[in-house]
Amino acid sequence: MAYFNYRTYWPADWGGRRAFSAAWWKIYADDPRWPPPHIAAWNFLVRGSAAYHRRVAARLLYMEALPRRSRSPGAWPSQPVIAGAVFEEPVAAAIVLCEPSAQGALYLSMLHCVNDEETLDRLLGAALEYGAEMNCTRIVAPVDILPGWSDGALTNCFHLPPPLHTPYNPPYLADLLGASMTSSRQTVLLHLPVKAQPEPVEGPATLRPATLAELTDALSPLLAAAIAPHAGMPGLSADAAELLVRWISVYPATGWVALIEGEAVGCIFVQADLAPLLQRLKGGRPLWLRPLLSLMRQRRTTRGRLLFGAVAPAWRRRGVGRQLLGRALSFAAEAGWRTLVCGPFVDSSPAVTCLQKAGAHIEQRYELFELDG
Image 1 (cartoon, rainbow, N blue to C red):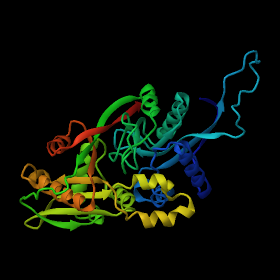
Image 2 (image 1 turned 90 degrees about the horizontal axis):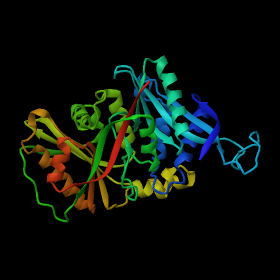
Image 3 (image 1 turned 120 degrees about the horizontal axis):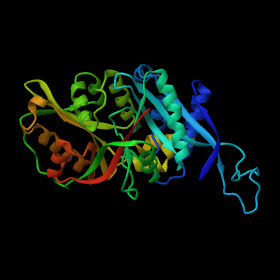
Image 4 (image 1 turned 90 degrees about the vertical axis):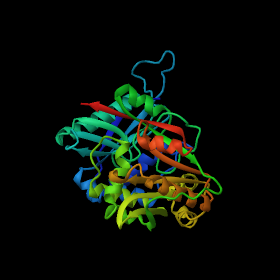
């Protein structure tokens, strides 16, 4: 499908944010495998009121255009070629994040785009114009709510239902990005089978329950270590950690911290994979489905997500990580999960090697792209 009569919008007020949300949602709305985000988390993200959004000068960007059909034989060049459309339709949308400290990087967060190379090029051009004002001349895409967390475009396994908090896009997106940008990083998602009765794992640490809120306080160094292997991007700042925890905590999560002589040396957090529920209930965007989404988010699932797992550098290779993973697998078995989905991780990272030794296998693969303006 080709398009013409493009319109570019940089919404900033309440009405503009609603229009952006409607456009962003509509682009992938007909994809039966797309798991939309929880509407409460999404609305907070689009408001841009988080401290992180203010620091990185986050802007909403979306484009509309009219679809163009092929001309019929014998038609004059000036004859209209509108494909049955009266109004422009949304063709691309993203949240633009600017990090001048990261080699002048501009990130396209939550990118949605139709299957049209010109549309993507126009979106990149509009983003670069904005970035030039902020001394950001390099585009990195696609990233999730912030750089370093679930980056990249899905490149395979489109037949599999995408797990919660993992990148998903139609098959054409990686090819579009590859035509206009340069591949910079590959990551992988691992699926770890859960035994019905996992063997207990002993270790040097004492494990106690932990909450997601601790990741923005006492456990913040471990959170930074947990997502650092995903990307060679800016280090995790306090305001980025707050946004990430708020985004994740809309769903129930369970975690443990490893203590040795009272010192936190490692942590692990898991969460039920509610992506199938979000698909069926459309993320709670229809008002009449929101009460049902709230009631059903406690339901049992067959798959879980390993959100974060990290061990302090001084305590690695001493059995702490294996002890934490064993505790997570025991919890997964009690919850009835048959699989624990881990990552995405850089394919050459120690985390991939460690999980493969525990029996995990690689399924989904993702690719991140860059463009120097």
